Image (cartoon, rainbow, N blue to C red; front, side):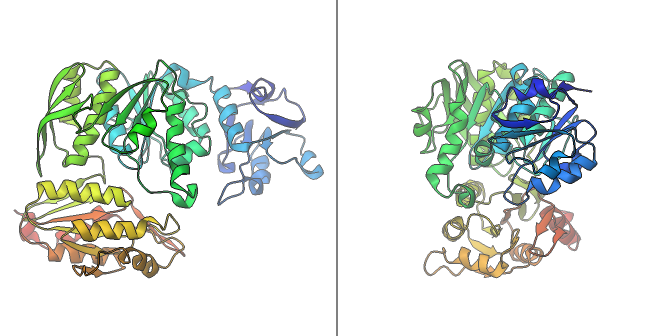
Length: 497
C-alpha cells in the first residue's frame, strides 16, 4: 500500500490556504467520491456536468482523510476535523498531487503520446504491439488501459484520456509489474484540462487535424492550440512523429524544439511507401525508412490504415526496434475493434468503423473506394450534444463519396434525433438523392444489408466499438456488430459462402 504524508504532497500545489493537520497520512488520491477509502484525499472538481463539491459529504462518510478544493470550506465543513487544502486550480492540483503521490512514474517509463482528430486508437495499438516485441508495453486510450497484446492490468475507462490520477496510478502499477513502455492517446480536451500536465513524454505522434470538439474548444484555433501543446511539452532530446500529408503538419513543425521524423505518402516524408497494393484482403507495401527498406504485409485495409502503419513504423524506428521485429508485429496485428473492422465477408462485405467526423468519413470512403469495385453503402449519423458544425460537413462528404447513404441516429443524447439528421442532410450536395432516412439505427443497418448486392460493401460508421446508445431519457445496450451478426443469421445461405 502506498502512503505519503499530506505535508510532503502539498508543497507541489499552488496553495491558497490550509486548515487542519497536514501531517496526516494519505493512502490514495481520487476525484470520484465513490472510490474514496479510509485515508484517501478527495479532490473535489467543479466539472462541466458534475460538481464534485456535492460529493464532499459522501467522501467524508467513506473515510476521506483530506479534502482539496478551489473554494474555501464553510465553518460547518471545518467541523469535520479533516485536513482541508484550498488551491487556485483544482484540476491542476489533482495532477500535481497525484504525480507526487505516485513518485512521478512517467519519469521511469518510455511514454509515447498519440494525438490527432482521427487515427489515435489504431496508431496507439500498432505502436504498442511493435514495442511489445522488445519490452512490456501498456496502451491507454479509448478502449481502456491494458497490456498491448493481452488483458493484463486491464481497466475500463470512460474517457479517451483518463483523469490524471488514474493515468499516474496506472503507470505506477505498470512499473511494479515490469512494464517499460506506455503508449497513450492524448485528446485535446485532456490537454486543456491538465490530465497529462505531469506526464513526461519521450515521444509524441501527430496523426491528423480537422474539425471536431468545437462544442468544447469553441474555435478551430483553440482546438489546434490544444493539440500543439502536447508537442510543446517535448524537450530537445525527445522526438515528434509528424504526418506530413496533413496541412497542419508544418504549423506543428515550426513550433518544435525537439527532433522530429515525418511520415506519409509525400516524396519528402522520412518514412514513406515506395510501392504498395491495397485490397479487401489487406495491405502489401515496401516502406522506406531512415534505417532501410521494410517489406510489410498486413490484414488491415485501406490507405488510411497504411498511413497508420507508417506512423507506427516511424515511432518504432525512433525507439530502435529492429526492422524484422516491426515487420513481424505488423503482420501479426489484427484490426482494432470498430476501426475499419470487417464483421462479414461474402457475396458482399460489411465493416464497422468509428469515423464520426467529416475528415474521418472522407478518409474512410476514399480508402474503401480504392479497394471496392462495386457500390459503397454508408450508414451513419452524428452524436447529439456535441459539435454541431461538423454535421453538414459530414453530409457533404457522404453525398460526394458514397454510392448510397442511409442517415440514422448515433448517440442522440439530449437532442432530437430527427433534428440531428436534418443538420446532416442540409450538407448534401445539391440534387443528391441516393439516400434514405431511418432514425432507428438497427433498422437502418438492416436496410443497408438488404440493399447490398454482389461485390458491394456496407460501411457502418460512427459508433465503432461502442456497445450502447444514449438517448435523452435512457441508455440502451446497442452494438453494431451484434446487430449485423444477428441479422445475417436469418440468411444462412450467405453464411455458407
